[in-house]
Amino acid sequence: MNDILQKLFILRSPKIGPAKYNALLTEYGDVESVVDSLHLSTDFMDDVKREIDNAYSLGIEYIDDTDLRYPKNLLKIKNHPIVITARGNVDTLNKKTVAMVGTRHSTAGGMEFMADMAQSFAEHNFAVVSGMAMGTDTAAHIGALRACGNTQTIAVLAGGVDYIWPLENESLYYEILDRGVVISELPVGMQPTAQNFVLRNRWVAGLSDFLILGEADLKSGSMTTARFALDYERRVFAVPGHPSDSRSVGPNSLIKNGEATLCMSVKDFFDDDKKQKNNKINKYENDILDKIGIIPVSESVLASLVKKSVSEIKTDLVVLELQGLIRKQDGGYVLN
Image (cartoon, rainbow, N blue to C red):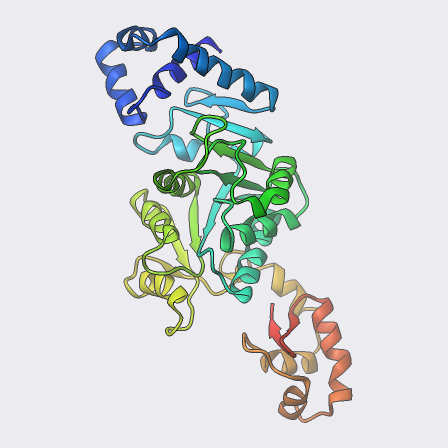
């Protein structure tokens, strides 16, 4: 613990981040010599000690980059965080990881798509990484938590690991603590600041084996995260959207420029889920399924398309819903 304390004395000093820390360590040789060179006040060092005491009272752990529990992907990034705080199940940090990001103003369909993707990844033993913001991030975490297990998702925060933001996600925060982990490089108790959201995005990308971008405006934090992922030579997948929707401009542009791979469904990654379900449905139900897309289609229209009465197709629609292939939305049916 003394080594962590010495490192925090340096990292909590004004204007010292990972890059400056590494430069000082190169100059002075070891952390004790760096601390001596800073001539820190007793009051300052007492503040750092109080932070650590508060952290331990909340069940928060400090993990430095020499710890075997430190995320291996993050360790590869230049000027990665020297020390992170973690609250929850730290075993989550060294699973296979997929980052899932997108706009805070996601559509209902966009959120459900990402939640379904996240659930499938969690069921295939991936930890889903996101930033616990409203919209797409929330959908990713919730989807991962639909799967069984206790190492399903990683939330990276732009404030202290104990500072819940946004407040609307308080219950989600505690569910992640129970069945995943929340991490940050910032002091315990610190409120989020605008500049730290960029750092948060950097670490979301850095933690990932690859990244999936959902709905996103061209100039958005999630696009910044995707750019970080590309810089770190992570593969980026993007979910396309309608050209007239500003939330589709980000992913569409990456696909168009050849920077991201088109992502249409979970079958792009795992071929077993829908295949197993499709084996259970008969040809007639498949005929109905072929007529359903992302735009809600009413029962009467579906009946007309398959040349049956509404009463004749009702049972098959129920079966398809129970199999998770379609869902009812806005008075019609859409694909799941």
